[in-house]
Image (cartoon, rainbow, N blue to C red; front, top):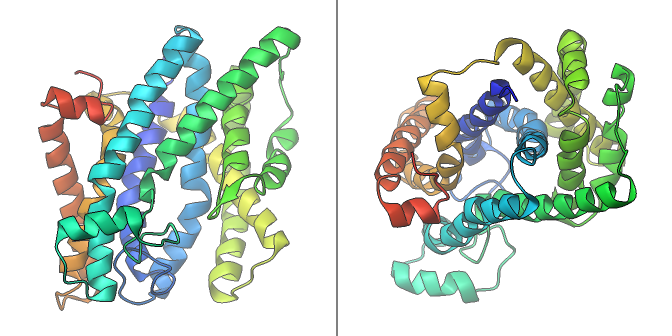
Length: 356
């Protein structure tokens, strides 16, 4: 089976986008609702983060579903689950104990003027009453929610696939018309309300994973998304502009906005996959390196970025200078730390890094 490199490239590109996205959170929303450190609301950065959020994480769940389909062609179910434990569950638990408390400590100092030691706050991380954001210094899975959700979704999807193969062995989606592919946002919309915890829905991410596994992994569907990529792009831009305007500038929140949010996110997914298949189906030493580094970079980038924000916000260099410096520092420091970690076997194991 020929490897579809555009899937790998879309994954690491989405991961790298997290640097400017998470940095922009420092100027988005409001105090205690934006990030672990916060300055003020910048309209431009609020618009940017709002425009990115609906599709960049959902894309990763669809890509995970596509990759699962290809992975199970050369792995047993047991091998796949063991691999998910090593790559997702172990790093989640390690990051929860090692990386996340750093961020909540900084938030406690920044917002509440905390003067105790880090070890004292480490105890508070597990005992203090929390709203799960971590912005008050209490417990939170932080950005590692993605690893936990992806693990739960992957294992659940495997059980669904096993049941499908037993009771519907001939099941196949077939070559759906483009309009039907666009309309898949509707069941995703309905699933958004299932097990929705803090705005992150297991139901939504599970159906996106299954869409990737059963539908977007099919070559006939991928060809269709490539063929109609410019139609998708137009719908993506129109829906995204409307959603971002209504959400940020008109402050509208209702069930129809939920539908627009899902539609915009879904159009982003199929647009990027269609364009990716056309333009990103390549590999190089750099892309191979970033493919291997993507998950560890995801895990370790956030505490570095939060720490950078804590200190850079004190510099009188304006918002543009501050966010540029935060992104630059966190990007460089993250990859330096990754290069250090991948050379130590025990740390490599805890971060799910495959030996290179």
